[in-house]
Image: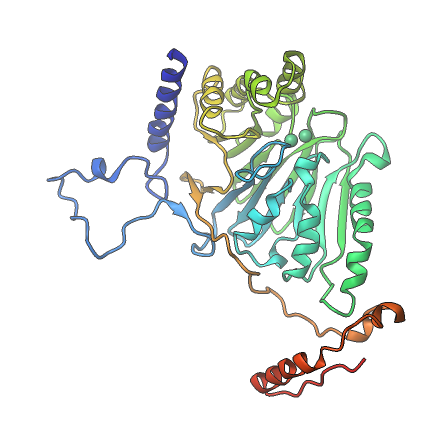
Amino acid sequence: MKMKKTVVVAVFTLGLAAGLYFGTHGSSLVSPAIAKAPGSGEPAISPTQPRERHFYAPNSEALAPDEMRVIACGTGMPFTRMAQAAPCFLVELGNGDKFIFDIGSGSAERIAALEIPYDFLDKVFIGHLHGDHMGDIDALFVGGGLMGRHVPLRIWGPSGSKPELGTAAAMEHMEKMYAWDIAGRLGQTDIRGFKTEVHEFDYKKEQVVYEENGVVIRSFPAIHAIDGSVSYSLEWNGLKFVYGSDTFPNKWFIKNSKDADLVIHEAFIAVPDLVSKLGLTPEAALQVGTQIHTAPEAFGKVMSMVKPRHAVAYHFFKDHDTTGPILERIRTTYDGPLSLAEDHMVWNVTKDKITERLAIVDHHTWTPPMASAAVPIDPNDSMGYSPEIEAGKLDVKDVLQPTWEEAGKVLGREFTYPEK
Ligand SMILES: [Zn+2]
Ligand SMILES: [Zn+2]
C-alpha cells in the first residue's frame, strides 16, 4: 500500500511541475477552473465559441521560422505492442527540413498519421541496427515510395566493427530483399523513390555527418550491445536537439549534450518489472536493464550532469503500473524538467519556451498530397507475366469493360479495355 501511495504523489507532483515549467501554448496543465476563478475579471466561458485546445492535431499548425517541433513516433521496447511502436523521433524545423531519428518496428504508421508529404520525409538517421531502431525502414522505403516520395530515401548510420555489420551492408540487403517488389513496380508505379542513398560513417568518431541549409548533425559513440552504436545531436538556429538511441551512460553523451534544449535518452524498464513482466531471471534483468541499457536511476544521473532545458525518457512500456516506478527512480537522481515519452507526444521548442502535448491523430489517413508531380508511367516497362500465368486469366471483360467506359465518361477521355 505504501508503494502505491508514493506513486500517486509522484505522478501528481510531475503534473504540477509541468504546469509551472510550461507556458500556456498547448500545455496548460493548470485547470481552467483555477486559472479563471469566478470574480477574477476573466471573460466568461462562452457557450458557442471554442476554447483553447491542449493537443496537437497534425496538418493544423504552422511551424514558426524559429521553431523546432519534435514528435515521438515510437517510444516502446523491442517487443511489438499496439500502444507503442519501437523507437522513432521526427524532428521538424521552421526552415522546412525534417529528420527521422531511428525508425523502429511499427513507427511507419505513426509517421503516416502525421499527414506529411513523403518527399519531405527523405532523411533517416539510424543510431544502431537493432530491429527496434530500424525495423520499419523498409515500410518507409517501399510505402513512402508508393505514397508520393519521388526522391531517393537518404539514410545515415554507423559502420560496424566489420563491413557486414555496418549500415551500408544492412541497407544493401534491405534493397535486395525487395528485389521482387521493385521489379513488380516497373511499368506500374512511379518508382523514382525506390532508391536509397546511404551515408555510412565511422562509429568511433565524434564528427559532423550532415551539414546543409543551416542544420548541423553530429554523431558520437554510444555504448550498447556491441561496437557500432551511436548517438546524434542536431543544431539549427541556436537550438540543439540530442538523441541517444540506445546507450549505457557515457562520456560522449555528456560532452555532446552541453547546452542542449531537448535531450532524449533511453530509460529502460525498471529491473523488478523486467523480472515480473518479461520473466527474465534476476541476473538477466540486471544485465539487460542496467548494463546493456540505461536504468531509470542512471538516466536521472545523466540528466543531472547534462542539465538540459528539457529531458525526455523513452524505451519503456508506459503502463499504469510501470510509469510510477520509472518516475520514482528517475526522481532519486534528477529533479529537472522531464517528459516520460509515449507515442505521438509532441514538443515545440523555441528559445523562449518548450511545450509538451500529445497529438490526436486520424487513424484512417490516406496518402498525403504529393510535394512533387508524378511522372507518366509506361506500361511497356512492366516485366508482365509468362505465357503460362497469362493463360490462367478468366475472361471478365463483360463486367470490367463498362468500368473502363464509365471512367472514360467521367474523365472525358477514351479508354480501351486491354485485349489478351
Ligand atoms: Zn538496441
Ligand atoms: Zn532499443
